[in-house]
Image 1 (cartoon, helix red, strand yellow):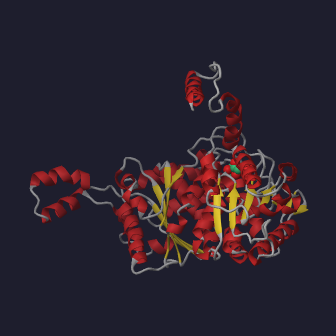
Image 2 (cartoon, rainbow, N blue to C red):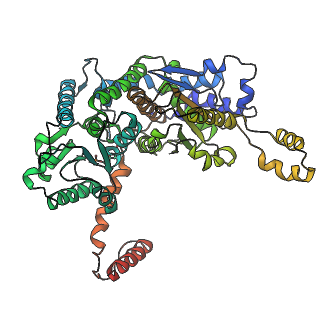
Length: 554
Ligand code: G6Q
């Protein structure tokens, strides 16, 4: 793998940054009537404006040259062709195959995977029909109206985010809960709200071995059996979404109540597979299909559009520019749509788990910074919290502002107010406010000179804080699908440029094994154990303190 920082494009970008660092983004707009048109792109119902980044035509040209040097086009082809691009796990990466309704075939190791995808989708559709028509009932013959998805990470964040985002599409009388944390309070609080006779537990786990999910699933099963259910009724109230048939059977779920997916679907890319069952049950299978179709429209754009007109490619390249040349180590996701309140958390996993890597695909250390810290909250809430640091902090933080032009629930002028904030923030972040302007403003307010001198530095904004704006008509299943696919492909393109494998997650695997080692050393309540003498002094000290508190508990 060649070192990306040694390429001509990379060196040219460094020179570009040096050349424009003295100027401001606001100044770049002046006398350039075409800037907005040149630095925006439209696809699959989404519109991306990236003109408020500190870029010039040279920068854009060199970013595209960088994508060519990194062979983004070749990597894109290899992904869609089913090559083993997740080479540390020996897997292909083909989640786009799950949402391709064009009857195109996809191959993994010479095998056509598309027929199996269609069969599973039909099975999901039939299952949803059974629940929605009331044909499929609980063990006391009452219709199922509640679902509890038990999963974590990729088996939780995606479906939960989508279910929240599509709230206006919820089917009448249906309730969906998500339990992920092994903290028993999560399950306990949920079970208080559900009826064992009308609840379906969806155990969502690719591996079916994840400690949190298996613990929650076992406790849910015990609760069901304690609350009127019998072993023979489990099939009516528990289904499994997994790639591990054997583990599902051992858990006691009938293989007929299992929906499968495949190892070429990464956990954080799995909401399009059987893992999306909770979505389909809550918003209806038709809307689930529309979500998939929306993502497919963006896939088609990503496959075919030239690099310069390719939305995920441009979003990725602007991200590389901000991360590696402007020096933004954090990136904010700021949806101006309350229903997208879980999008930042979802993208935090998608991005940080994919590109939070420090070695390139061939195992050598990366020579450049890779994935940024992703965080965010919906606007306008974030404006009253952490935006202060975006405007006036010592670090430059880049941000994506996301907004629908029309709200799903237009009430009075709420949405106009929301949109005016959306626009005002990106403008302010870019333009800032000079000390001269602040002084002039304070002078016009007839403030004394001493006060003006004291206040001016505090009221000055440096500006030049880079933002992208993504707008669309309305948050529909189709647009949401396209939006998610946009980010998936952006992350992929950045991984290709940084030379990392975006599809493994050894950091997650580490956590899965570490907790199991310490588990036997934690006491049960009221139990006294001899002092533990292993581990580092901090871990040992904390462990003994916790065990003492638990042992002393009444
Ligand atoms: C996602 C990660 C991780 C995974 C969870 C749950 O890409 O691999 O977040 O989804 O650890 O794993 P299971 O679905 O196997 O329970």
